[in-house]
Length: 142
Image (tube, rainbow, N blue to C red; front, side):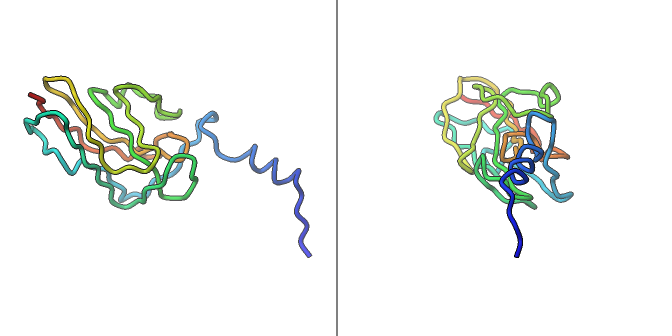
């Protein structure tokens, strides 16, 4: 009969991955995020519906730790090279979290030109290694 030790289980949980220790979940080599619509270069009106795509991985809500899954983060006018990819992504007006596993959003954007890009985050909002990052698209809101 196997014994289960509460102390050992607690130690495993405490030693497990955490966004605080810089742990990044691995991403499969073929994983790819992309924006289905609007098309790059499109001129759109408010509200703007942005549809997310993902190949090679699955969608899981935040706080659900499963291999080869994550949830989308929409980067609006944000350069991903300026983000710390070893920590949990902040939730801002420019880094919009979809921790419920959403695959699209309808959002008002200010008139003008905007850069949109998707970045997949793991269960704790930390980007995968390597990052699953879409190509940036540019849209104009009239």
